[in-house]
Amino acid sequence: MSSSIAPRLSILWSFARPHRRTLAKGLALALVASALGLATPMVTKHVLDALGSASSLTRPVATLVVLLFVGAAVSYWQWILLGALGERVVLDARESVVRRFLRATVPAITRSPTGELVTRVTSDTVLLRQAAASSFVGLINGAVMLVGSLVLMGFLDLVLLATTVAAVALVGLAFAFLMPGIAKSQQQAQEHVGRLGGVLEGTLRAIRTVKVNRAEERMTERILADARASAAFGVGAVRRESLAWTIAWSGVNLAIIAILAVGAWRVGEGRLEVSGLIAFLLYTFALMDPINELSQNVTALQSGIAAAERIRQADALPSEEAAPSAGRPELPELHEPKELKELEKLRDDVPVLELRNVTAAYGPDVEPAVRGVDLVIPRRGHTAVVGPSGAGKTTLFSLVLRFLEPTGGELLLDGRPYRDHTHADLRARLAYVEQDTPVVPGTLRDNLLLARPEATTEELLRVLDDVRLTEKVEGLEEGLDTPLATANVSGGERQRIALARALLATPDVLLLDEATAQLDGLTEAAVQECVRSRADTGAVVTIAHRLSTVVDADTIVVMEGGRVRARGRHEELLVSDTLYRDLVESLRISAVTGAPVT
Image 1 (cartoon, rainbow, N blue to C red):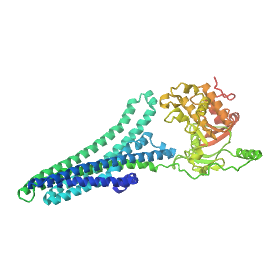
Image 2 (cartoon, rainbow, N blue to C red; image 1 turned 180 degrees about the horizontal axis):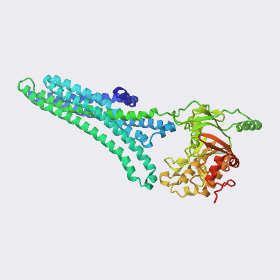
Image 3 (tube, rainbow, N blue to C red; image 1 turned 180 degrees about the vertical axis):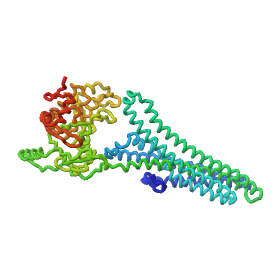
Image 4 (tube, rainbow, N blue to C red; image 1 turned 120 degrees about the horizontal axis):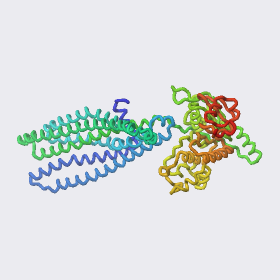
């Protein structure tokens, strides 16, 4: 990370730039309020002079009252303006990061702990509120107030000004020396907060595993290690800030004592009026305001820069760019039944999915997970993919779903290369049921409608009946509108919810990653019947970790070491392929019926 302040400031400014007009208005209001504040000691001097000369106090006192109320109104307007701007900056940053996360490639997102990514959207964006919305205004306004105060103090008395400048210079040197350390400590504290979020999120997700292994204390210590590190860096920043403030406060108070001593001497010598000394002291007391504003905004700026850099790291995530797409091939307008049948037959002859000599790896310096894979998925029927762990089955699905791009060869949908389709076009034709199926935050209805938001309640109930979930839904207090977080769904029920969602989408290709692994025998038989029915009208591709789910598949593809080793039907592979036969024997599956051997 570059230590130069200009590039880092430009990152922070990128969040404020879209709102520069509002910032300009806020700056104008701040300068007006500052000008009114700077005028007050001078008007006070006129009040004191009027007392000494027995002149009327009406005009100067009325002026003070006007300055007070106008200044209050301007400050109130400025606070509302910049406060609302801060919320818009935070909202824009969160919207940008959330969109970037959800449009990023799957490998890019899964590379970092989920909790750490969440902190970019939550705590990091909050640090932008003051930094991007008001720090720029505060710095300029504070500098103007400081310079303006010093100029007016010089107008009153140059000797007293020199005394004040010495104190201000001391304060400035202290802040220049301490601020870089404050910024570094705050950045390191925020980094540890991100790590804490990542470890905590993963631990809570695996809470059952943690408890059954009696690892509560160990995981607590691991999480709190980052919390303690963050606190330590935070305390370091507080100590430096406290030292800076102590120096600033002491410097200004020493200046006041010096001004009183020197000012009393100059009044006694007749070189300065008492009203001038009082006005000068008022400016000195008020000098803490611009110093306070400058120091606070420098601190906020440092925190905001660190947060902005972390948020902008999301921009480096590779995204699934939406390339131009022609969509599905346009069909000519036909009227004769014979022509329609011929066209349908011609379309059926083209595989819905095809992999040609596909090779893929999860990184530039990583060994390929699949090599030279050739695979044809017909428009209808059930294709099963089997093989030992690490054979490349999941990578195959990642390629089909375009979570992963091939490094060699190509994939085709309806005979057209994947590169001619957008990610959305491809996935509109596919449905996927994961083995360890998560639920999406929301209700049961929300989860089912992910792929088809326009589906009716009747359609939802139909697919729920297909996967034997009707009784479960009827037992929920709010039915389809029950939040799944409170529905206490089991692993098998989650799988069936995902399968119901996939069936509701009526995809061209249904991808199942052992979608019956957590089901009991009766429910599994019902779901298998549902899958077979789907295979009659579309393509079903199953990754099988237990062969009982695929012995009746139309085609079984055996993978080993990232390659396709063999393909055929169950009976053929039992005879021709030793690996398949070993897999069958290891799982105690009958070679004849596919039923478990008792």
